[in-house]
Image 1 (cartoon, helix red, strand yellow):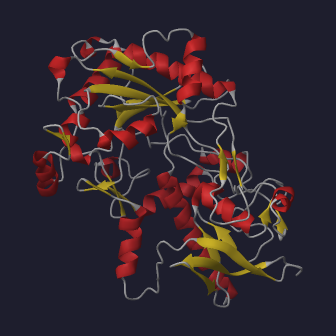
Image 2 (cartoon, one colour; image 1 turned 135 degrees about the horizontal axis):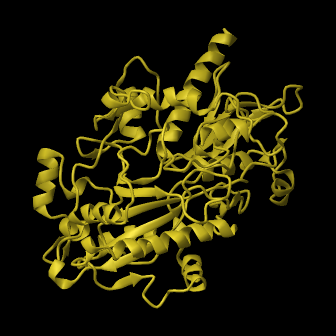
Image 3 (cartoon, one colour; image 1 turned 180 degrees about the vertical axis):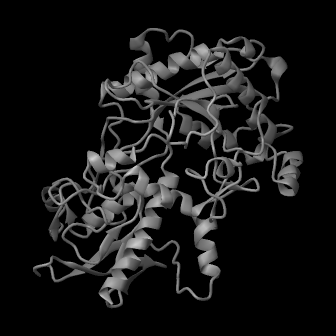
Length: 471
C-alpha cells in the first residue's frame, strides 16, 4: 500500500521500507510478535498493542468454521513479507485491557512533562487560518488561527518561525482550509469567500471503507452466549454486569475488554481487480446479533437496549475501495457542518466485493461448528438471495467502517490535485502543514489509526528538521 503512495502518487520518501521504522518507533507490542519478528514489530514504545484479553465462544467458532472451509489462519496481518490473506485475531490498541489512544499514550505523558510547553483548549474550535502577504512571491504565510472559546472569538498568533499544523481529520481539515480561502476557487466564490490560494484538490478524493452486514440470531437455548448479553444486561436493566466490571477492574480481562470486532480476516475475492495481488475484502466477526442492518447504527443503539437477543454477525468491508467522495462547504459560516458526499458505491467493483463478502459470510455460518449456534438469519434475511437482491440490500444498508482519509492528499508539484507536498506542507502557503489522515493519497488496506500515528512521527521529524535548517 505504501509503495503505491510513492510509485503511483509521487510521494517520494513514503515507500514501505521508509515508513516501517516510524510504525515501529511508537509500538509497544505485548503479543510476543516483537520477539519473533523484530522487522515488523517493536516493544517499548508509547503505543501498546495486544490481543483482546478475552475470547468469546462464538469467536472461537468463527475461527473453527474457517478452518473447516480450508481457510488458512494468519497470526499477524501486519507482516508485510507475506500475504495478508487468512483469518485470525486482530491486534488492538490496548494496555492491560484498557483502550490505548493517541491521547492516553502520547498526549498525556507530554502534558505531564514540565519541560514541554503545551496548552490544550477544549471546546474551542478553530474557525479560520490567519494568512498574510497573499501577494508575496513565495505565497501567503500562515500567522495563526482564530478560534472560539466560551462564546468569544480569540486570535492565536505564531511566534516567528512557527507553523500552523492542521489535524482536524479528513472532514474538518478541508473545511478549515476552505473557510480560510484555500481550496477550489469556484466553490469558495459560491460562498463569498475570498480566494487566497486556488487548490482544486481540497475536499476531493474522500475515501472510506464501505461495509454491509450478515447477522444471525442464536437459538433460545444459547441465551447469554453473546458478548452484548454478557456485559450490558442485569435483570433487564441497561448497565454493565458487576461481575464483569470487577473482572476488568481487578485483572484487566473479560468481556469488557473487547471492542466487539476483534476477530476476522482478509480475502481476495472473485471481485478483486485483475492484475492485483492484494485482498479486496476484510471481514470482521462480531459475537453479537445486529440490531439494525447498519452496523454503526447497532453500535449506537445496543447500549440503550435492555434485552438483546443473542447472535453473531459478519461485517464485510471493501478494504481497498475504488469509489471516491468529497467534502464541500455548506456555507461560509464555520458553525455550519460541511457537506459529506461519501459516494460509497459509485464503483461497481466495491459493490461486487461486498456482495462476495455476504456470500462468504453465509457459507461460514453453515459450517458444522455453528450448527448448534445457528438460528434465524436476521440480516439481510433468507429471502434475499439473487445478486440483484444482495446489491439492493448493500445499497440500502451500506455504512462506514471508520477510515475516512484523502481529502488533502499529498503529491508532487506537478500533480494538480495534490494539496500538500510529500513533507505535508500546504502547496503555495508558507508555515502551514496538514498532519492527519486527509494527507493519504490512497487508503491502506486495513485500519488507518496506526498509519496516522506513523505520519505524525514523520511530521515531527520534518518540523524539527525545518527548524534546525532555519537556525
